[in-house]
Each structure stands twice: as C-alpha cells, then as structure tokens.
Image (cartoon, rainbow, N blue to C red):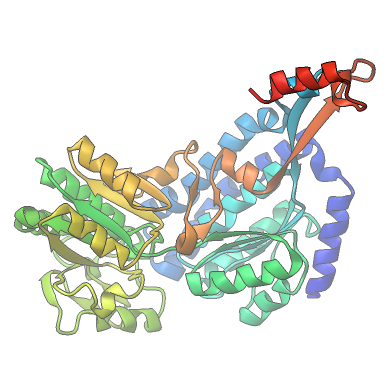
Length: 457
C-alpha cells in the first residue's frame, strides 16, 4: 500500500469537485448509516473481542451515537450548506454580505482504542457532510474493530473518497508526512503536541480531542443515591477508559460517608457482588495499562472494591480516600475504574485542588445550590460541564464537544462537526451600479464634516 499514492488520489478526487454537491453528500451519509446498520453485529463482536464490551454498552456508546449523529446531519445538511446572510454596515451599502461553508479538503482522522468505532466514525460524519474526503487510521491496539471498520468502509466507499488504513506507529508516521489539509486526532496530550507540531509545518488545520483529569465536585445534595448512581455510571462505562470519565471526586467532608456508602451500593447493584466476574464488564486494554492501574492500589486507603484479575485484565470499580493531592495518582489521567476521593471544607480548596490539573476536558458539579454551581462553572476552565450528571453533555447534538488548552483544541458533534471540517468563507457583494461616493477622494470640506459627524460619534 503506497500511502503517498492514496493521498494523491484523494486530493485529485476532491479537486474534481464531486463532493461539493448536496445530493452527493446526503447520499454518502445515507450509505454510511445503512452500512453501520448492516455491520452492527460484526462491530459489536469486534468490540467484545477488543475490550470485552457488552452488547448493550456497545450499542449505546458506539453504534447508536453514530447513527444519531448521521441522522442529525442528514436532517440539517441543506440548511447548513446554504449561504448565511449577515448584516452589512452603512459604509458598504448598497451591497450584501454572507458566509459560505467551504470544505477543507483531504482529512486525516487518527482515532484511539477506547471507543474504536465511535471515535473513528463521528469525525467521518463531519468530513462527509462538509464535502471533504477522509483517511482513517484506527488504533493498532483494537485490531478486531479496525479490521471490521476497514472492511465496512471498503465496501461502502471508493478509496479515493474514504479509506481505512490499518497498521502500527510507522504507518501513522508515514501518513503524517503527507500534506493533509486537516488533521483530526483523538488521544493523549503528549501525542497531541506532536500532531500539532506536524500540522504547523504544513499550516494545516489541526483538531485535537485530548483528555485530562476531569473532576466531580459533590457539594450539597439531598438525594445522594441519585448522585452516586449518575457519578458511578460515568466511571464504570468502558471500565473508566473514557476521556470524559470522572477522574477524581472532590467531596464535602460532611458528605463523605454517605457518598462512599452510596457508591459501594451501586457498584454491587450495577455490576454484581464480583464485578470482575461480570461478563458484561469491560477489561483493561492491555497488560501495560493494567499494571499501571493496579500500581495505584499499593498502600492505598481503599474504601470499596480493589479486586482484580490479571488473567482477564479486569479491575473492579475501586474507591480510594486520598489525603495527598500530590500523590502519583494525581499526576496523570487515570483512565481506568479507580476513583480517588478528596475531601474539602471550604470552597476555595476546590479551586486549589483543580489548579493542580487545570483545563479538564469535562467538569462535573453535583449540587442543588445554583449560586454555587454558577461560581464553579464560571471560575474553572473546562471543555464542557454536566451539572448533577456525568458525560450526558456529549450526546446533545446542540452542544459542541471539545477541550481547552491541554485537553484539546477545536470541537465537534452536530453542526460544530460540519464547521470543524469546513472553512467559513466571508463574501461581500457590491451593487454593480449604485455607489456611496463619500468614501472616495478628494474629500471636500463638506465631505470631511459629514465623515467626522457620522464616523467619530
């Protein structure tokens, strides 16, 4: 497989202007939708093989969310493609101003292993809707998912339009040597910095969906059972291997005991007495990540869970009481089912704790005090926020999803995906005959008086 040739073929196909047509884009979105429906069982089987994801979790977090995104784009595509009229100031009249969305061109989508279907296809929806072409490079750690994706996309589209290329880091490096118009990367901050540097060499647009340590703050709640259930769901889905999973809890001291009791209760209710023996509970992606995670359990003050199985690479949801915010577990994103709990008494302590790991991808606030919620939301920079829930803000098509600074640059989902893969071109059209002569020299005394009167107000 010659990667340079693949890039050139996609560039030539994009330059043919075939993808600019509304009917072509809509047809390709429908084709993708039908393909996901047709391949759904094989995709679910691949997710089971790669991550031990249960069928229901795979449908909700990998299949349905993609189908929902496609339908949303099909419904709104024509309106998005229409020119958007904007106001024209007096000095430019008679004339009109508007914006048109122009596709960026050839896109490289580098997708991760934790949601190998969703995070490969969600950006693809935006690329197709915007009128671009796409090369998708899935993670080499989820081989079964990558194989099915490659077969599905190969059946649905010609390679000069959309193609999946599988391989290791060397393949990714070779792809990054091509002058793509847009690099869309989901993964770690460390790799994200390298992608940004590569994009800068070609002055390509770069979208980075990274991660970070997303805090969950528990302030004053009367129904701790509901809060615990919602918090735990965000942590156990995909065994905590989610970029927006609650990474740690900042809990008011007065609520520590009730919070821990409620969390332990829902661990058993959701996953049974022994979560690591639950066949629907996902495993950790690799032995390397497994060893990193269980290393956090050594000498830890465990308040619940703590069991694991090295043979199956499963770790039960584990609660840890943390006294030192400088401990190793607070130095990097956990990306697993371990949930440290830090207590606080004064609100200012919250800001101090989060300042150790600023700019999280997500922020979760559990409180019935709107004034408190608003202070937290306004003072803490984060990619997104869910109040009294976790991860739900991701599934609203009207809310762009993305990070800030170290947790990412750019955003997507819904209309924002269309914009991310497009350039909004500003257009001004002057009336061919009528003219406002006041702007042209020479400027008489009368003209100068008029300009000073109206332009220096």
